[in-house]
Length: 219
Image 1 (cartoon, one colour):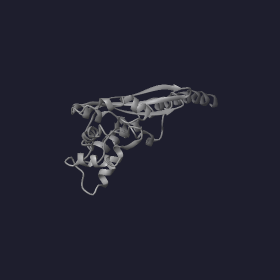
Image 2 (cartoon, one colour; image 1 turned 180 degrees about the horizontal axis):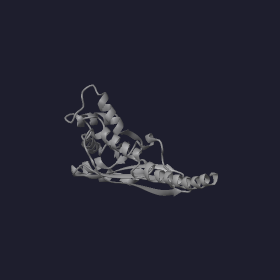
Image 3 (cartoon, one colour; image 1 turned 90 degrees about the horizontal axis):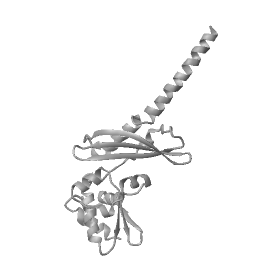
Image 4 (cartoon, one colour; image 1 turned 180 degrees about the vertical axis):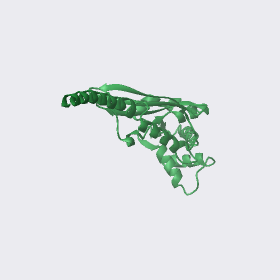
């Protein structure tokens, strides 16, 4: 009786271990990771309300960065019906089959939706744009502007064109920085939207350009 119990146990333990491995590899940490899906939805809702995006594809890519360090690239391809875009989140682990148990780690996807909306509106920002994957991997802004006395008015108009996409809620799922000619950061998209919120007079599309001009006049 004891011998048969040991045999059964020897059979069940490998089966259990195999099932646990499959769950970890293909559920908890993989394409259909429940946290991955949860935070995709949360971030889309945060920036775009109840607008429904179609998920076309979801996948995970694993890259060996260096000895004992792997980069997990969670990638979702979505569409609003006209524009197809990607949401990407990079995380790191010391093991190739590792992953992240804590759901809060999944906040902070980067996407190129607003880049594509801006381009579709005929606004050419190509000379200021950081390539999307470079921005994701290096945690860089989407756009970097260098403001000088000679191009200040052009920068004002370009920043106005960008911020119009988020002026209603004073937030935008896009990141830019503005520097002076010496490489000193003057401001960024976050600070400018915060300035809009703090303004004595409501900032909207009609007075946005004047407001930005006045803000940049401070530097």
